[in-house]
Length: 291
Image (cartoon, rainbow, N blue to C red):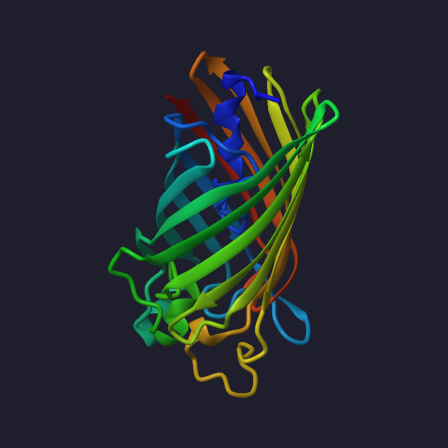
């Protein structure tokens, strides 16, 4: 089954927003590629701490994160694709002038964050009647590219990253009907440096990919290894990258074509459970181009 070229732009939406998998269950053909520019914004004033959820972000009261992301995917061959993603992030707090002055803090951190480079390989693409089953594997590296710091004590509550290099592998299975409905499941594991706990990653997605539009609903999760610490808990020294971050996040992604090789993408996503993470809701929108 061949997905129409018009829909190839929308197949990148899994990697646009934060806390989603950087790879999708769709493959591009040799020589095909897409470039996507998106703007993302999320905010939170409640935090999932241990043992309970709390009102107000420590020190900064409320945090707003915005990012501009450049995302691209290219088909080296029909069975091997390369994905690259580079975000610029601004993180803003809402601490009072007195708190900032008394502690020497600032209400903003911004800069280029981590470059993400993944390879994706199709092990199996099999017709099941008039439907299609795909089994894929993906490995990648995410590493700091910008000159930011995650070791500034409580100031790091609004850090734009954790200064960690991550090596991640995913197994992906996708089933797609001949009329465009699909289900995708992913399971992965991430090895992380800079005292950041390793993590088990998963994502499940249901959607529709057709010639007129694309839409999916997803649930993604992260389960950090138990060697991490809890914010303000036993063993916490003020070094936030070492915290044990778990989450469950749900969301919607969509795409509508506006020209033969271009379209508009957008979506919404929200944390519904977590550990040592803000209870945020985020939105994104952008432009996608195919070649």
